[in-house]
Length: 381
Image (cartoon, rainbow, N blue to C red; front, side, top):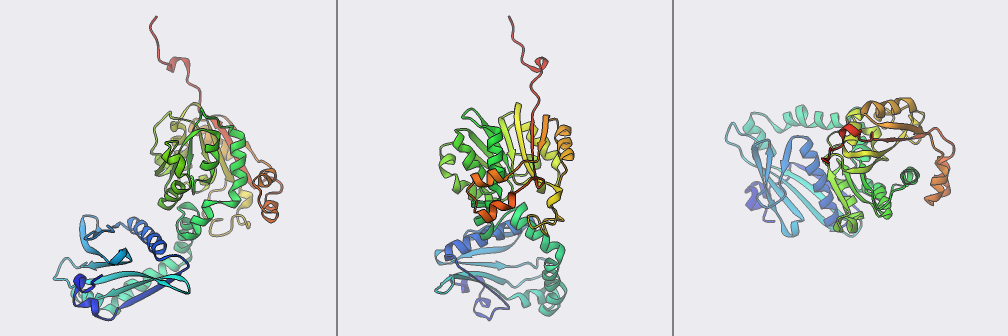
């Protein structure tokens, strides 16, 4: 990239801020994943970055940056002009990834020209660093925000290399997956909906029944991963994946014979609303299966902090009442023995032993009420 064309003359000046991140991944993999997470984080902050030549960095309808791509898209420059009430010099943010023999690749982030931007705004770089930058960094490092980020990164909205590896083959979830498959007895006539599908591991196993399926997850990273892991089913039209929220499922009503949520229900902010959306999605007499941890696991090695204080834990009666209040019938809650399913999943003995006994998890099974005779379409004789 000809940096001088982006923000001359600052491109050749020493950087005001430098961050370096090594990784044992190829430059393409590292930069691609970093940029996906950046776009996701910017979106939650109310900003948008269009990663294309000339693309905009925007706050709402206000454009305050422009993108320049370097050779092979391994370098990205963003010329930033945030001062819109006075004549503003530019700042330059650059991201560059390079291969390294020792670690695989290294990402370098540099900021140039920021002191002059702040001077134009009426301040200094030192003042802004002390009053704005460091407080923002330290706030994100405080127990509350850091715990929320860890919850999102690892469970509520999985993202990053570790999450991809975990959810591609989620070892500790397989006993619950096999239990649900055993109870539902899916057939080629079924249309399955999974809410919070993670990396799509349960969907892959469920599709072996010959059913068709759809899945909804609000993590862009998991939607991509599940699509890769189930590419053949997606290309054959047997599986559709949607990015969306459990409280507003982007699927048609009365469309599915079975709905499962084997991982994510404990993280839903409004479980009643989510159950209502699942009920709507099911056909009359459609089956529901939820797998959740019990309160007995709060604070245990299976659910330590920050999960213990940020997840919802249910008692059997409470979970059953939630389902009945949402409109489900034939509601029952099991506290199953999971060790047989851990063995069926061929988990290592040291992992399988964690599933001995009962009391750590619940399976809720329910149905959508059958259509009443007065609700059925009338025919003329």
